[in-house]
Image 1 (tube, rainbow, N blue to C red):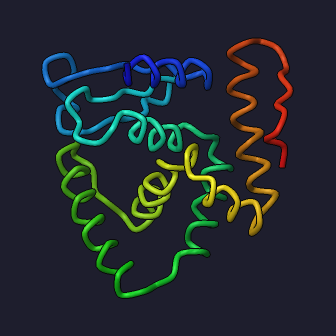
Image 2 (image 1 turned 135 degrees about the vertical axis):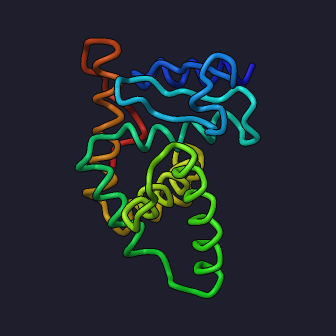
Length: 168
């Protein structure tokens, strides 16, 4: 049921969801999911996190560069540098350093903000408070995110769609 819902969401947003495991994709056996840059979001069927959360994370990575960069800047500017954030950051950095090392990559400062923003965006589609705060603080960015989602849908259906009730 969850798989069907995530597949449907991916289809509506112009992304193909590919389910994998250690046997079908051994190079990514330890990743919970990834975006391949070709319109496909891969989700590890044995990941601990819910598939919808992983989809939201990878959907962020699939956004156009300018929208992703603006979202990262928005998150940077609106993240309070508190002791609890620093502790969370250290924990998240350690986890991602291990993931990147397993993939033969080096984790950099810019990677932290990319992944932290993706982690924040995991709940974007379901957290009304987050969306309202984003709209209040940066209406232009919120509009561009909505436009990017519309573009995905327009490409999927090959026609322009009007959305009622979600205009910014």
